[in-house]
Length: 219
Ligand SMILES: *Cc1c(COP(=O)(O)O)cnc(C)c1O
Image 1: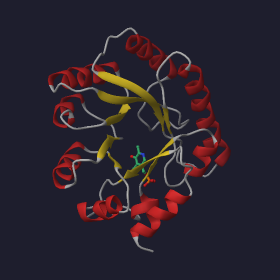
Image 2: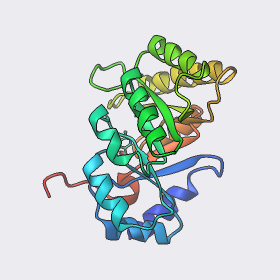
Image 3: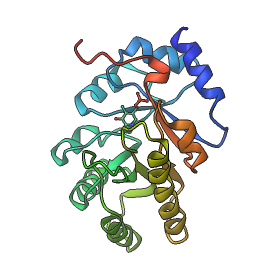
Image 4: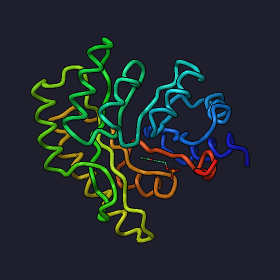
C-alpha cells in the first residue's frame, strides 16, 4: 500500500469528530507532502530541530503540533509558528511558552500532558500538578497561552485491560475538569491503540507508523 492509501484507511477508521494528528517524525518532507496533498493539514513532530526544517520546507497552512518533551530553552525557536504544544509538563515550561508567545504577539494553544502509564518511563505530570496548573491558567496567570486539552500516553504493554484502565482514568479526569476549564481535546491514542483510545473517549489521536510505515531511527 502507498502511504496515501494508508492515510485514507486510517481516516476511514476515525469518526468525523475525532481530530487526526499525523505524526511525521523521522519521515522526509516528500512523504509529508503526499499526505498533505491527500488533505491532511495537522502534523505532529517531537524534536525542535527537525520541526524547524520541515516547517521551512512545507506549506504554511500546516498546523504544527509539538508532541514530544520540550526543553524550556528551545521554546523560542518554535514560538513564531507553532500551533499547539501538546506536551506541556511543567509550570516552568508553560511560563516560557507564555513569555515567548507574548514576544511574538501570538497565543499558543497548549495541552497539558499527564502521566497515565503505570510504568514509570513517560513524561507528564500528576493529576495534582495538573489541578494546580489549571487553576493558575483559570486565574489568568498565562494570558498568551490557550489551554485546550489534555494529552496522555498509555503504557507500551500487550495487556489491553491495563491500557483501557489508563485511558479511562484520564477520560474521567478530563470530563471532571471540562466543567470548569475550556478543555476541548482529549489527546490519547497512537497507531497501536487508537481504536481503543477512541472507544475510551479520545477525540484527538496522534498517528505515525500506521500512516507512514515503520520509523527507521538509524538513517
Ligand atoms: C511517535 C509518537 C506518536 C506516534 O506513534 P505511532 O506509534 O507511530 O503512531 C504519538 N505520540 C507521541 C507522543 C509520539 O512521540
